[in-house]
Amino acid sequence: MVIYEPAMQKEPFFGSRVLHDPMASKQECDIIIANRMTSNKIFTRDLFGSD
Image (tube, rainbow, N blue to C red):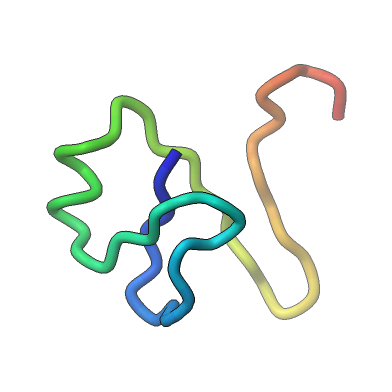
């Protein structure tokens, strides 16, 4: 697992590599999972069908 976050300075993040280049992350990953944050909620896909 890798994390794409251009602003994150800490590497690694909980044992995962942090990528700063969006094209490099697209080339390296087979699947991309993204969260979307609003002012007070985080929306994410329910991958396991439980929520």
